[in-house]
Image (cartoon, rainbow, N blue to C red; front, side, top):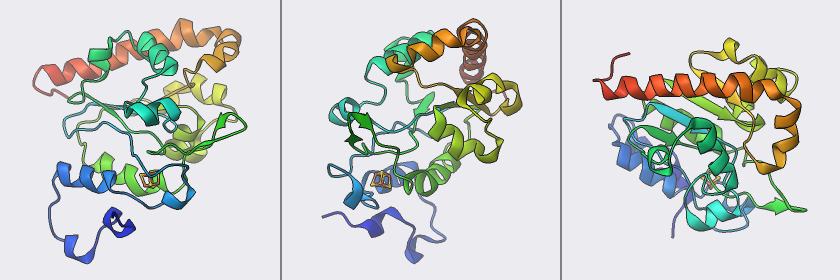
Length: 217
Ligand code: SF4
């Protein structure tokens, strides 16, 4: 049986250089908030030490929890459409890491997904981020990802944060969640599709292309 102690650094680990595979094994063995989850923990992420783009979303929904594939749902289809990417390009883990704010499905209440578990991002994001030194751009999708990475730099509303994208460049790009439920938001903020999506494609293309020519920075 997995224990919660497997998810944190022990005295024996100090001074030892952990491989990326060992870090991922610790993530996959995490039981830290098991008591609060509707199912046994199933962390769902994709990461590699060569990734250049990091996508940080909210937390897996039920379908993603069942399939084990992040963004394997209508929201993922729209995100890929925004990025102008095929599924093959999107799931190329050597270039694109996908790490949600909460790695395990948190459950639902009254038909809505619960927030990511608050223990998760502070525990795993710093360790994973440190193990992916080539990340050049992080897409912050939705309010939870923005709150974790931007903190007090967030705008008053999600629209304010997304509209102020220049303030967070070049490291971060805040985005709304591409959920079909947000159609009204997209309609009310036409500048997002007209201005932010083309800019995002350009920046993502440049970040990934730089990794194709020997890692020029
Ligand atoms: S949500 Fe995060 S902290 Fe909780 S069990 Fe899963 S990996 Fe661990």
